[in-house]
Image (cartoon, rainbow, N blue to C red):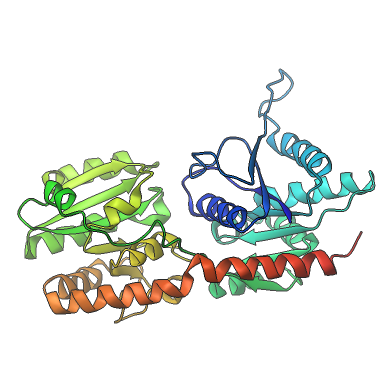
Length: 378
């Protein structure tokens, strides 16, 4: 099958999932075309059966803002027509689902029908889409898609709750590539970060307010007061400056490393003892799943899709949003007990295997086939 994938090409969850999905499909013999404004972060090398189409925009004196949506729609029409694609898979409702509908209607006037599958990832529904100014477009775009998937049962239910959606939504979870994310012997690397055998806590995100990264510092402070430990903060974003200031105020900077964006995040997860995810909203928790695949237990908030990934009392612990005291107590209970840590590591890996890419990819392939067969040509 020839599949076009439209996504944000950033380090965020939706872009990562879309890119890894496309690469996985390409390995299984499908021809995959990525269509976006720059090469996706995880599409860093040549891959057989993968083509990248860059959406270029031009500034005109008339426009205060560059009309990306129009440029993307035009590019979709061009790629679908001349590459003879069988299906478009767009990730994130705003603006990709709406733009795909526009492209589909243009192509119909030229005698070409292209089915569209929209995948909902989270903030397109819980934050962006829930804005009343966007709600009608989000609902319309979802209802006009030939197929709709959500990355968790929680997100599916939120979509029905927030919007007047009558399309069936198929839950297809995010996934993990165990060829990449796995625990490995990195003792020399670990010793460089924790030379005295300190426990290593880690957090990965895009440092937005909704990720509540300051809560990570609060949890770490309580852990550090109980035992020698180090904190790795991986990622970047609008809250980083505030976090650095807060870290200095709390006198934690000697034990905390701000590592910025990392392509090889798995190498850092592989040496970690505990993953902290105190998010205020999380549709699935892909970063937590990546940690679990590396046998790292998770301390997280009890929100959104996280309970579907992190099993309380088995792979880690769930706490209410903002309850840093409970999170810290749970973290300490794992890190102080070597036997418990070992068991939680084992449980985390077993849970992560439920989301193996080799189990999830066939679900997408089957869904694509269903959509192509049942799409209504209108």
